[in-house]
Image 1 (spheres, rainbow, N blue to C red):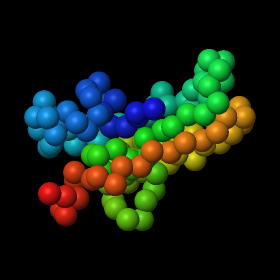
Image 2: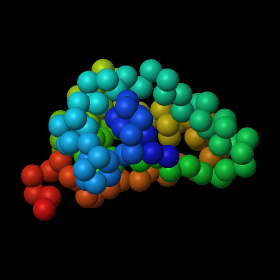
Image 3: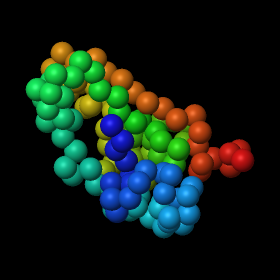
Image 4: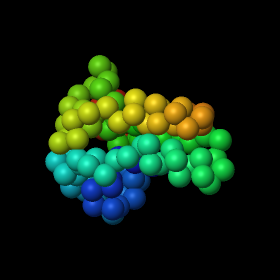
Length: 118
């Protein structure tokens, strides 16, 4: 499941700025509008179960470097930099487990916002 600040403008995840469809600055402006107000992992989990899924995998940090949890390694997270201001990973994991589903987490080591990225 790809979920992150790119949901604000409905653009492709971080590849949109890597492929010059949007500037990095404009892409990151989506942080200001990310509220996650419709984020309902319990509803997702029920849907996954009804569809016959045995597991789901959520992108915890895509190449844009925006973490969906309160990481101590960076200030670039939905907890610290968006109006959502909360961890989105823990509720996801709890919801899947409550429906008997296995929890998968995708984490990108590539981080285009990191100064060491070349």
